[in-house]
Amino acid sequence: MAASPSTARAINDRSALRLLQDEGPLTATQLKTLTGLSRPTVADLVERLQGSGLVHVVGEAGAERRGPNAKLYGIVADRAHLAALDVRTRSVSVTVADLLGTTLAEATAPVGDDGTGSAVEKAVALLERTVAEAGADRLHSVAVGAPGLIDPATGELRDSSGLPAWHRRLVGVLQERLPAHVLVENETNLAAVAELREGAARDRDDFVLLWLGQGVGAAVVLDGRLRRGASGGAGEIGFLPVPGTSGLPSATGCDGGFHELACAAAVASLAAAHGLDPADALTSGHGPFLDALARRLAVGAAAVVSVLDPGCVVLAGETGHQGGPGLAARVEADLAALSPLRTEVRATALGDAAVLRGALLRARDAVQEELFP
Image (cartoon, rainbow, N blue to C red; front, side, top):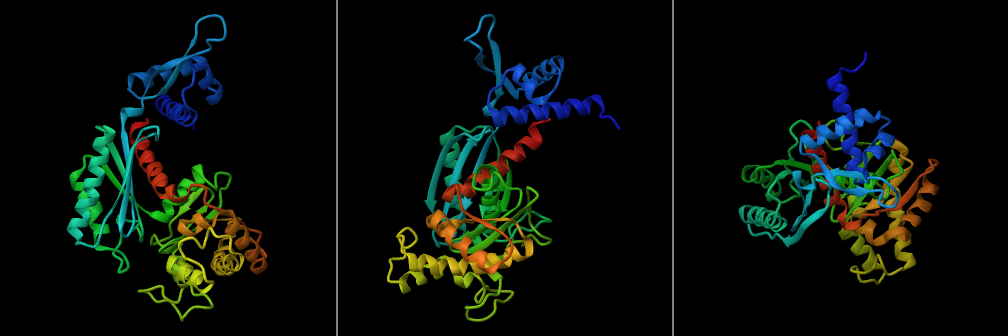
């Protein structure tokens, strides 16, 4: 059944807005070429989008040829502002951006163990100062990246004995204090979204991101979509039972799981056992240490690969970032010896910025769902 005229207009407008956001300012002729629409249809949609305040003239193109210059149309960047928070155990990082994703202000501050209320206030105050510094008077959406499980039914961060209580309280306070939509997502999932759209997995529809930091987790992307699982726990690889650990993990703790081999504390202990300073062991180029670490990581990766066959694994988090392509190449070689499924292993392309970038993308998607017709 053919789409109604109003539905067709909405589809065309959304397509044009996506192109203007992804490709930058475009002329009407360029929009016609990229969308395949007729010239009159493009002229109508440009007029509609200008009238809605979403698009404006940002300049001219074609100064090198004779005749009148073509107008360049672009997104009205300050129509809405976005904020992203990367919430760690003892710190918070904030980025504020416009509708095009351009960073307007950013900040990072420690958040100590001086009580839930104080920690929440520090985090909220940091966001409010950064928003004020950016001049973001149209704050529409705030996306929070945090460790822990997100309930797929409610979108809330679940209780976890391994995380500070202020993490869960923070989202509620932000919702109370800010005139904006507040969203929360698992940090590993956000890193995967960023690597998929702007980083190491841009050419992949299927991949698994291994988050290797203070905690250990994974994000699963299949057919270009993030997969969260029935309870929001897809990728809880820290609980994976593996050989070489102290025992078996339990429902309340991942001691004895892959976490015991691959978390930051385990990596530091392995470095010390090789006579290295844990602070720079990953960048030291010390072959025996990197080989030993790669063997550990390959064990966990092999379990994921044998079930999902993603074709690509991205190493992220502190260990993945610092280990870089050298560690990734070692893990790939060890994985090839453990699994018949051909799998490429890549290092993160976004490093420490992956979670914040993913949170900004999530906030921008939320804005687009409301503002783009």
